[in-house]
Amino acid sequence: MRMRMSGKLSILVLRRGARAPLHIAIPYWLISVVHTCALTVFGFIGFCGWHMQGRYGMSGQHVLYLGLDADPERWSLFERLGPSQLGPSREELQSLAAHARAQRLGLGTRVAASSLLTGVIAPAWADEAALGGDLGNGTLQWPVERGRFGRGYGSGEGGYHLAVDIEGPQGSEVMAAAPGIVGYVGNELRGYGNVVLVVHPGGWVTLYGHNERVLVHAGQRVRQGQQLADLGSTGRSVGPHVHFELIYQGRNCDPLPFVTPSEVEHLSAAEPVQHTAWNPRQAKPESVRCHRRIPHPQHEREDDDDNSSNLVGTAERTEQTPPG
Image (cartoon, rainbow, N blue to C red; front, side, top):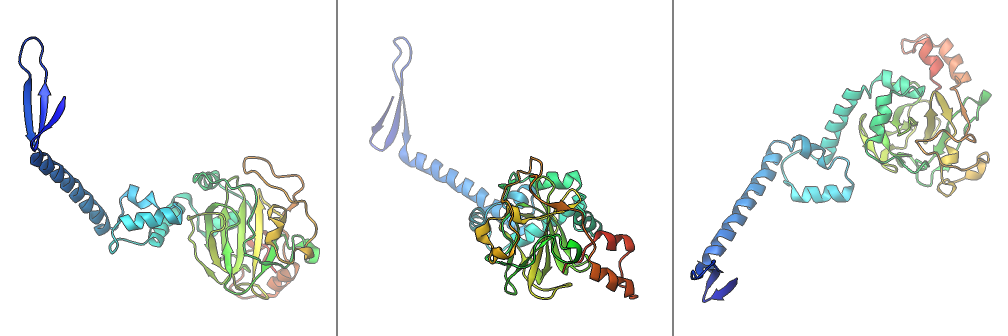
């Protein structure tokens, strides 16, 4: 039983038998002092903790990975709670984590790029792409908002162009078609200019070529619709566009059936396709066309006449199709 008695907390303890009740009186000022001291101690611990993390770069393992894959709203809250002046930025933390992941998995190298280009996916790469829990919805986002359909799958001499060209203004955002992990960033694949390859759950690979500037790193996780690069015209290109490929199990597949038609400008220029979805846990839909990579006839003839030291090996020329 508790009752208030003139500025004190009085506790009445009833005892067995005929023994008189025990009265304990605690002044309210003492309770306030204890309460204030407790809040001060916890506040000091929290203050020191955040600033120690800031002083040492917020590099503790749990702190390092806490907000890297969070959405922007969660990360902004994390930044407001953390130190405002000390420690690396979110972009720097993402770069560090991506670099460590790429080293662990062997991503980001020219060897990895050649493997991805030919659809040879290490099981660890596909597993890592699915670790974030976002398997996508079985469709592909058109990589350029309101991007204009240029050339389609199977066009060109001998049907060598097993990709889709997406035209747009120079510097437009080039976005990830589906969630995944960046497998390669660079310009070592002949003809593609600044290129990005992304590994997706289920072992798909998407390729984005001719970029003006790349904004992601090998090993970095990306969301569907996240910007990967700025649209450009690097490499073998006749104008600003994205050379977009979908690669699966050693074959190039037509990405257009997985794209929402309303996202595509000038879609009437494309061959009619049956629009569908592709669950990463299921087999490829039978209606989707997939073929092995075909060498570019014109570029092969140019390479035969090229005696410069910049030539790639015969095997590499065979497996790579410089885009048109």
